[in-house]
Image (cartoon, rainbow, N blue to C red):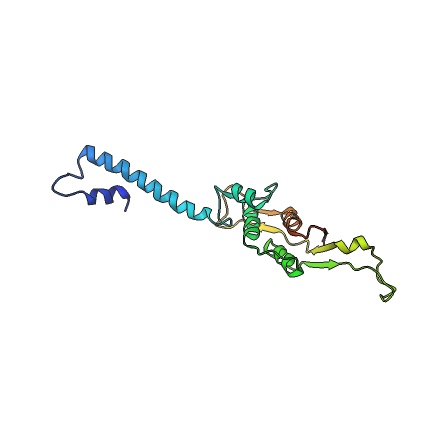
Length: 184
């Protein structure tokens, strides 16, 4: 039932004829305004979560410091949701978790240690600067995003991409480190 019908039913039955042409037109106009307000209020509920935002997605990205370059709406929502709901960390599981949330299961991390006299002679030699470099080993099959029934009608049916992963990891990495990405 729409608001125009509800307004007609709320009129005092003796004082007003709800089917009169003037009052009926007024009630339809007021009812339509209330219907639109209700639809607008319902859509606002989607905007309070970056994972479902549409009209405010640009604002979410601005506030969270994310870039939308080359990403679909779904990828942007996933990245914004991951950033918003992350608690932050500098651990391996944290960065592997980011990769998994963005569609890269099976990601591993390699850290380098400086060679010393007690190490194996066959170990690779790394300098002191290499202590601040780590490699994210990402399965090359990851990063596929398929459209579903909740996808935007203007989005691609499927897309592949790794820029969202690299942006998310580089945004959260410890400032004194550098990340290399190895797609295996």
